Length: 358
Image 1: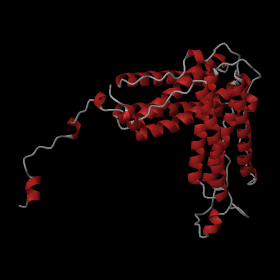
Image 2 (image 1 turned 90 degrees about the vertical axis):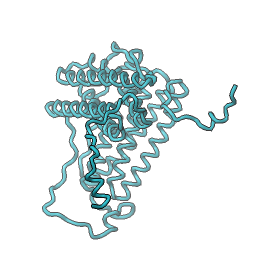
Image 3 (image 1 turned 30 degrees about the vertical axis):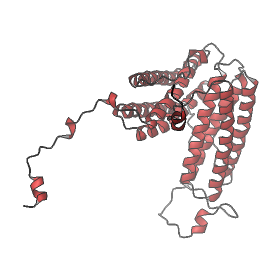
């Protein structure tokens, strides 16, 4: 019997996997987990300020039931994250509080828009929770984000059902069903687009463009409403600039569909009332816009990775650069007003090593 066989047949007892136990509280949070918890807390605390106002103003009982469900979920998420932060001895972010909204302000958005907006926020939550779940390792953190994923799935499903029942669900364009499987044989014809004739948009490209245009349309109505009620002139000017950028980007993206005789997704600007009473603080408005823009940049990144026509890739890159420049100015405004909470950072080792002992 060789050494390998002797080792295999030795009397060493194998420890079952299930017996290995760890105290989760003794496992340090990773930078990824801290970042995702921090960002999720900020976004959920913002939602917890907007949703009570939406629930108060909504008159449609079907839509209101969805808004109440989302408010309950946001409250549960905030409570769960507070518990996680406390167990890790991590300072709870300030985020947003009852002082950041006025439930008595006049209705700023229609009931329909509030439901469309809620569905969009569920999509944002799904995207972020999936990433957070993927890059987390601690069992309780993974469990929290898995719960978030399930919650946002339910909200998205319920919002879809109500939108469909009320004839408000905006679908992407349809294309002819192919009658056979085909392969690409001409490299140049597949990638062409910058000069001369372009190949038709494929299903993936159409889906991404439609999603981006829909997001821009929802964002456009939000900026329009916020621009009516913002108190600071600097914030008003910033929102006005954002409206022009969004209008221009929607025009560019919509032209991709009109060139192919495809229908353009609907717009929502008519869903904004004429109220000038602000339900939200300028701090919340500015933060909300940064969340929207971050999601827009993510959508453009996904689209770029899934599009092969060169004109689309160039267009998406230009739109990202424009949004990046705009959001930088928004961050500057937040810093100027003392509104920007610092995201947790690693230690500044060089500074620590040069500090003189006393």
